Image (cartoon, rainbow, N blue to C red; front, side, top):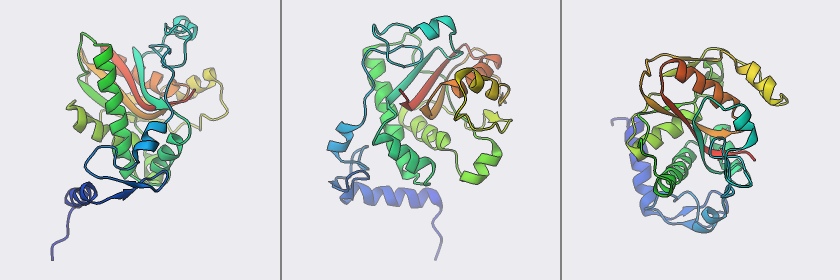
Length: 247
């Protein structure tokens, strides 16, 4: 008997999921296959934490007027704008952690769909003349961290997002060359110092517009440093796309 490869096995699992009721990951209520949010029920989907409508168009943090916040005016990041699907709060934080630390990679399907939905809505409501970016670049993990975890959640989300949007992606374009200490406990200036020189871009991005993809944006220091490296490689515009933004 032949052994199914991973791609065939994943297709079989999705085929079954589309036809059989599933238990919602959050409340265990029955969900129905055949749609992109089938891992959670409609009620839990509606209850996911939303970002405030008025927020800074650069860093995606709340802004009273919806204009660029004072921090981004004083020190603009290397990325042009950050786009976040939702706020990093309960119960979305539980889903992200289950994917990231619990190895539940099926959740990456849902996270990518949530991000793709936000991008579709954003472009419908605020069309950008330049159109979609040329490349999706996932946030890289240092090889040591990748070996410990076994996968890079940003790559898993980026792979699915590229398929959903039709945008080309290069999971190998950037790499993390320094295994930096944890960012927790550091102020913003300390986080920036900690990440200086942490990334390396391995391809020529001259004249290209790119989107950096990650699961969560906290201070934005990692995305800022990776955006600087992308610009050094020639990128003319860099966006940061994340599933969740901490507030």
